[in-house]
Each structure stands twice: as structure tokens, then as C-alpha cells.
Image (tube, rainbow, N blue to C red; front, side):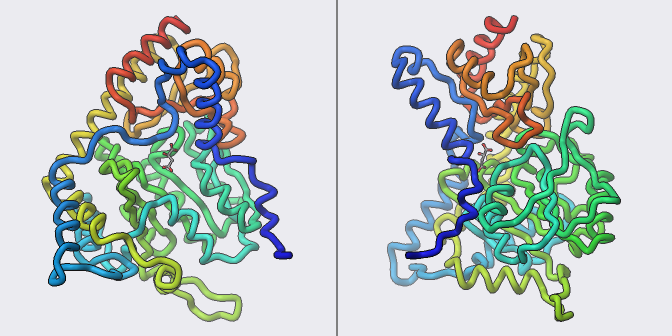
Length: 401
Ligand code: MLT
């Protein structure tokens, strides 16, 4: 009989978004008429179609497969040079220098934030903010790691800061944050970088929502902070930037400066380790998708993607304005697609989920799914359709007004 990875016994029975989908489907089956009225503002899945520039590039990629002269088989595990260069050019436009061989193109940030545990041992002090994207916690539980939580709450605007008395080896940060929409400023990120350098720790920085930052004072990459290349890995995704949730493409930046000593004193390069890991376990993102990704980062592509982002940000404003009118306290929604509000009438977040589903057929994400500190909060996404978002907010006003 195989010995199983019993760490899985320590996970919640199902992944947060599967649980929400399951509960919503069960409600719709029981109440077919009301089920047809459901407005989904739960999972952060995009709804706008891909833009023309990106679509043309995807078509070019497909056409290349039709002739033996241009056909592509296995590509470089790290990503095609043109895609890596397009990504570094995008960073440069935002004032950040990144070397192309620090960039590893992948099928998305979710896989990379999960797979990164391959590079670490099992007796690290791992700091993870609470609330946060559940993948960081679940993937550490899967490999039997202990997690130390750092509290995000209304008192610190859901932006936990380092505590000099708390030792750390690995720190997860997500900014703009999923689920709270809170965003670290440069001074705050510098504090984290200084803390990581002082503790010989590494920061795993998820910047999947960077394209939603419109405040020029807020950093879109941890590498905008001096010293970060010695202590940070950055994950990013085209899912929200360019509507690639179904197309799948992301990238991870592992600077060459990032080196730590083994227990026997041998210097180990994280860039070389990740390269080794990817070559062994990954055959690269598809050529067709990378053609699309390259186009995302062209001048025209960025403009086109920003149009969709503005659409979503307008939805976020509709939600934020409604909550303001209803006197419901909330965070996020400005440099982020997420709105994180305090559950009205003292409800806990799963009660609020059921209450909204039953009374106004609006589906959101209960804050408890992101950690203990989310039990009285609820997340709405702005990735829906505009008219549906307006309707959902009209229903909110009737319910809570
Ligand atoms: C979310 O809703 O939190 C995201 O869509 C999840 C993800 O990006 O995997």
C-alpha cells in the first residue's frame, strides 16, 4: 500500500472557490427561479474578451503551427526570448530594471506560487499574512510546513508590517492584496525589504494585481525598492492584467543576486535552482500563448488591456459608492479590483454569504476563506459585467438601505 502524503488531512475539505461554486450550484438547483437571477461577484474571474492586438498575435501563433518552416515543438522551459524581453521592457517602462534571464514565463502565478515550495526545506519560519490568497497557506500545509500568521486588520489597514522581534525565513506578501485590495507604499515595502535583509529571509511577492495601481506613488513591483533583488522573488500573472484567466500565462522573476548558503556553507543561487526545477518539471508555456503574452506588453497591447482594467475599475467604483452610501465600512477598490467590506449587522462571513444568496441572489466570497481575520469581512470582485454589477448594488441598497 502506498504511504500517502497525510499532510492533505490537515487541509480544509475543499478549496475556497470550489466550496463557493458548490454552495451556489446547490442553491440554484433547489431554487431554479431565483437561481436564474444569481449575480456572481465571487471568484476574481475576468469577463471582458481579449483585445484585438492580443487576439491577432494568438492567431499568428496558431498559423505558425501550420507550416513546417515556422512550426514550434518544445520551447525553452524559461520562456521564449521575445516574451522575456517584452516583460523586461514592461518593467523598464515602470522604472524597474530586470534582466531577461531572471524572468521565467509560466502558465500562471497560481502554479508558481504553489510550486515555489520545491526550493525550500521544511523547518523554516514562514510568515503569511492573514487574510490572504489561500494558495500560500494550502501549499505549505501540503508539504507539512508550519505557518506563522501575521495579522492584517482594520487597525493596520490590512497591511501588516514587520515585527523586529519576530524571526522569519520566508515571508509571503501580496500587494495590491487579494482579498483586501490594500496596497503597500514604497516606504512600507522598504521596511519589509530591510527586515528581510536583516533576517537573511526571502520575500515571496505576489504582484498579480499590479496593473490596477493607478496611484504613481505606489510601487508596482517589489524590485522598485532598493535591495529587493537580494531578498525577493516576484510572481506576476497576465490573468488580471490582460484577461488571461482562461488563456493561462504568468511569470516569475528570480534575480541572479538572490543567493543563500546551504547548511554546509555552499552558496546556492535561487535563479539556478528555479531554472533546474522548471527544466525538470515544466516544458514551458505554449508558443501560441507566449505570442499573445508578448503582444500584451507592446505599447498598443498595454493600452488595450488598460481599457478593460478601466472597465473593471469603474465597476469597483459602483460598488464602493454604494457601500459608502449605505455606511458599510470597506477597504480596497481603488488600486485593486477587490472590495473588502465589513459584514453588516454583525454577521459572520459565511452567514453573510447565505444571507446575500438567499435574499438578493448575489454571490461574493466570505472573508473567512482567506483566514481568521476575515471572519467578519466579505469580498466582492469588480470583474463582472457593468450592468450586472449595477443591478447587484441596487439589490444591496434595497436590502441594507
Ligand atoms: C480570486 O478570486 O481570488 C482569484 O481569482 C484566484 C486566483 O487568481 O487564482
